[in-house]
Structure formats: structure tokens, C-alpha cells
Length: 81
Image (cartoon, rainbow, N blue to C red):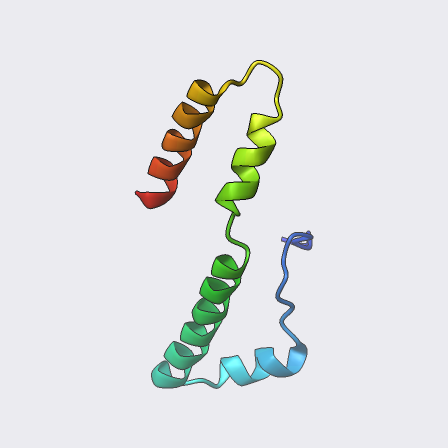
């Protein structure tokens, strides 16, 4: 348990930790909800540019237009499910 999570983008300060310890149920729901909302917004901001992806895959030697269309259909299906 002494290992630090090096992939974490959110650092819990000592002050915030002390506040959380004293939260009631409603305050904890608001706090966690805000973290969730921030994470959700962060995910939508880093969405994949499908046109750029199509262009980059199309540059691969041996990938023709038909195969590229098949690949993009699978990718689109994956992201829309």
C-alpha cells in the first residue's frame, strides 16, 4: 500500500482529505459527483478524431480503399456501441 499511483492525475491534498473525513452522506455525494463530472468532461475533450484516424490508417502500405472502409466501419461500430 505504500506505492504511489504514478498514473493518477488527481492529487488529494491533506486539507481535502481532512474535509472528506468530516463529510456527511450528502456532502460526499456532491464531492464524488463533481469528480465524476470532471472526469466525464475530460473524456469527451480527448475524443478521437475519426477523420485523422482514417487518414493515418489510409497511409499504411497495403491498405486500400475497400479495406479502409471495412476498418473504419468496425471502429465506428465499436465507438457507437
